Amino acid sequence: MMTTDDLIASLASDTRPVRSGTAAWRIAGALLAGGFVSLIALDLVMGTPLRAVATTGIMVFAVKLAYAIAMTAIAASLLLPAGRPGQRIGLRWAWLLAPFMVVLAAASMEMAHLAPAHRVALILGTSWRTCLVTTVALSAPVFAALLWAFGRLAPTRLALTGFLAGVASGAMGCVIYALYCPEAAAPFLLVWYTGGMMVSGLSGAILGPRLLRW
Image 1 (cartoon, rainbow, N blue to C red):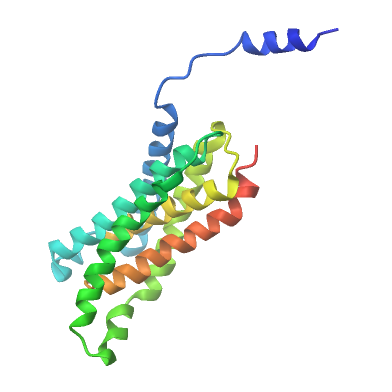
Image 2 (image 1 turned 60 degrees about the horizontal axis):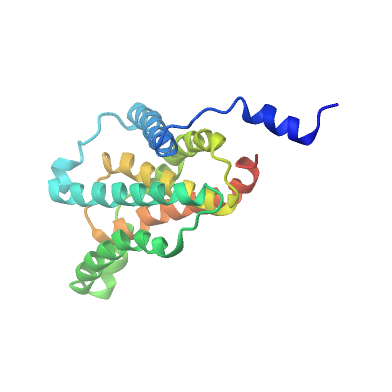
């Protein structure tokens, strides 16, 4: 009969060293793979990207893209400690607020120069429903890819990991949508891009305990 010590020795004999940075590369690869699938899907529906840049201008496009990329990168970087036992995020949560506060400041400046009657129109733009639905839909392939990436990381805080995976997925969805977005106002960016990220994040928090369990 095999003893406990024999079992441990048997399991340990088949271990292999893990290359440093493997987890980070898996997450980055999942984001890129999921984002590529989302881009192909949106291209089939909406056609060639970047056509709206001629209307919005390069600077506005760059701001939208930078906000989405920054949120993607920050949420993804927080996934590593969230998905590993014994590690804590701590005050690194505040990193997520930095891009948001920049966009909030820009939106506040735009709103300050408008009469109250015109502010709602600036927030809604002409495509707020399309923006919200599309960014959340585009996050689905990215979230699925991240679930695959976490298949070997053994997360223990499943709701937190799911939330951050959802935010990262939603932010990547915003990166893809920014290539098509016809809006030029910072308040629109603040409300609907952030809204898409948060809907994806909350969905991830709900699904995480079910789909990330190992």
